[in-house]
Length: 316
Length: 292
Image (cartoon, rainbow over all chains, first blue to last red; front, side, top):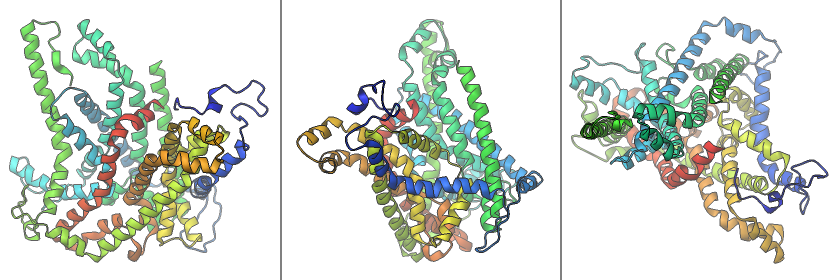
């Protein structure tokens, strides 16, 4: 990762290293002291994330309930069969995909636009840079509360402004309307996630060699051509990375949507995370909720694998 | 966006006109971004400065008619919020200190020795970025219940430490790598033991990294919502994000002012942190994350 390596690592390991490569003997038996130093960090990680991960997968095949002394029986794939015929789950799943894909795509488009602007020599750039950092720094709960104030049907500024422009006559209850609630929270998702995407893309843009673009300009390529055939291919690895991360993060989103709508109205914004939370902690179906978790993770991994494979192929 | 010379190979005058038009479009787009990014923040601030009488008006205005700081005073007068803020502070401080104490030796080991654990640890850091929380919240809850840590701040600290550990570990090992090993060897030659070397040579040089890691640990915990929601059912032990979400209650509009004020106050720690590391983010950390 870094070029500043310790001297024992700077020289290549001797060909006849007694215990395989990568284990250079050093004063004080490195392996044991390494383990000693790592132990305090390993214990919590194993106890509270590796073990739960394994246990969670196991729970998905049981009928575990929330009570303290409940008998837990292994039920095989029954939970998954139930999932397949659970209409609410499919609805929630669909909402989750619409949410994650829209937010990810819009984040990329909006973030790319802003990054290109910030890469130009414009006045007020500092203000945009600073403002772009703020949503990143804000706690998700506060972001949700803030947008609830914006969307508030009576006291919110959005309805007041739209009324003043004459776009709407009545009050729209943005977060409680069946048809606009999902788009409304998608806007908030883009607002929160765009800064990170912008910063990463900007870092990538600054890594694109200037000579390449200048050469294209000399050849008479217009701005759009230069962007499509010079900048974009150079940015591809960065775009692939941030898009994959954004997709997973958006699929994992909980706090923001919980604060905004709690999944309402009528489940129209109930992302899979919210649905699983309700099943587990409101109704106590631990096994069933765990099965949901497994199914969601499986789908996310599949989507990612397909996407990454395509990107890799096109990069070649 | 970079539409400066859309005219391509037109006449010089045409190109100049095109360039000016392009610039104008760029400023227009920038203005659009500024409005989109800024207006919710302005509205939050505006709401925080309004009187409760003004909040009840049907035609809200951008600028408070009679600006007041009463909402901030009201927020400080709310026992629920103040108590929750104190608990959040305790949890965040404890998490930050604990995670750095745990991560520091491991970071040192990762940066200085080469072992098979390096790969595993780094892989775990990556996985942690895309961790399926949905899969582990239930088992984590069950484990903590068995340990009697549900509804306790200690339980929340344990969870927060675990889940910001990977990133803190990665941050710190970067800082350890930045300390030239030559210095340690010099100290060793001078007869200092390993422990002595670490304490008196490495630690002072690591101080800025440790501060950054402490702040990161603090902010992660201060902002965290999902685990707090699951673990802390009893209102007596709830943290600030939970208290804020529950604050408005049935009284609705009247309490929006104090809520906005409290929200602004609750954002301050994160803002301080991000201002502090902004330079680093733009330079080292992000490019490191991108280039791998």
